[in-house]
Image (cartoon, rainbow, N blue to C red):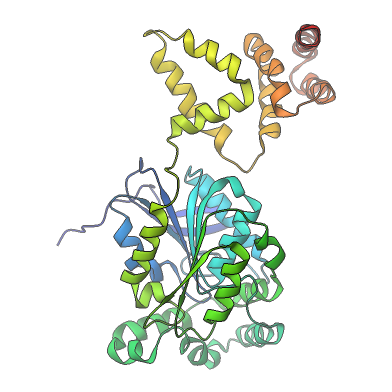
Length: 399
């Protein structure tokens, strides 16, 4: 029987990020306007989101992945911090050339999503936070679990932890699935489990999350005992978001009641602004850096001869590296100035020196860039850059 799922959008299900091999699954059309990224709970892997991701992957790009210490991803030595997980996600999105996404996270996955939104606000279109909080559990709880994992006693604490994943009805009516997910928990790397417990123990996002301005939705299984509805209600209030309880579900409603979760996600997505195309994103950044006057002149001068070329550079330069996030616009502009000086590309260098008024690059910054280039690319190109900069800045100051 053929596999009806859309093909993988990436050639390999593994990528090395921050020295850690991460296992991931990407499905859906590469040109989909929206990307959904699913983040897992403690002791689980990407498969807990299969039913939800499946329902979106024919029309939307979906990303599932095993966070460090889980599934088929590496389990580096514990402890981890929540920011370790956040930077792993940033690196994964960079590797997959995904600029922005809606993050859908459960439990610790929801905390990673919150932290990512704080660290990279321009890369988050929306948050769907399931059965989570801005602060989960107590130090005593996490230290007890860390100790058990370090002593290779996950089998001792797994039944208690697992009993809160699902309702009793799920356990009795779907015993094969229940056993499979229990095996998933049992086979989690002790290093990965202990490391992520440490991240949960040390993370308190309440002040940080209260400052987020991203569109958000909170969902919670009505019978969740691990992160109960009251905790999710507090999170919703911090975000100014709606909270919806999922009937007949406990801590993993996306696995237990995927249809209900999908319905809420679809409603949430329908209320988000339409995602920008790569061209539109590139044009936005191009105007931010070069200025409206320059871009308007360039657009007016376009003919059939160079129309495809202008579209190409807008999509793949301005909508590509310039829009990737991670590095701020000022830093990218400094790199661009250094490269244009070293090559040299005098016409483009002049244009970008003119644009420094838009990117907070100062005359002092230019001096340091040119001095650095003089060491590594030669005095003549740096000398010429100084000449161009003096002329451009003088003309700009007199205008």
